[in-house]
Image 1 (tube, one colour):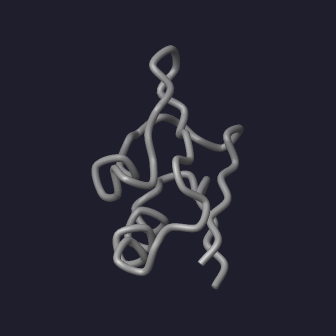
Image 2 (tube, one colour; image 1 turned 60 degrees about the vertical axis):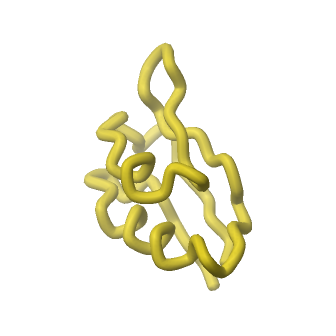
Image 3 (cartoon, helix red, strand yellow; image 1 turned 90 degrees about the horizontal axis):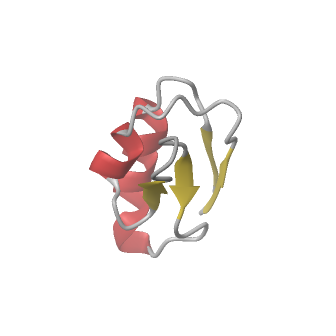
Length: 64
């Protein structure tokens, strides 16, 4: 799994952080997503996929 983010698309909703806090965080100044782990371990794949689905602006892209 490889995760990429498009910061320009992020609206700062924070759903990704709630779903996968070991993979995503938010910048304090504007709430934009911060990718903590672009290649998370297998035990975080399900939460990462869920975060991708929950993102209201499709700022998260996962490739397998």
